[in-house]
Structures are given as C-alpha cells and as structure tokens.
Image (cartoon, rainbow, N blue to C red; front, top):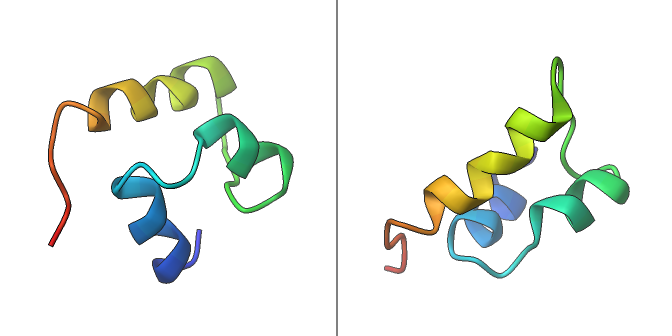
Length: 48
C-alpha cells in the first residue's frame, strides 16, 4: 500500500475491504485475519 493511501487507511477514511477489492491493499496469507487489522487500528487515533 502506498504511503498516502496508508495514511487515509489509518485515519479511517478508507475501508479495508474496499481497499482490498480495488487493489490498493495487497495481502499475503489469510485475508480474514488481515481485514481484522481495521478493527484493531480503530482503537487508536492517528489524526494529526
């Protein structure tokens, strides 16, 4: 994932499933586990 898109992902402006389906997020391994990353990151504030 490119840095600019990753920042949008961290701030909650991009949905992980949408990012995956559009090819912006590439995953090696279990996609279900990777998509859980979004719920984990929502616990933190990355707004600057």
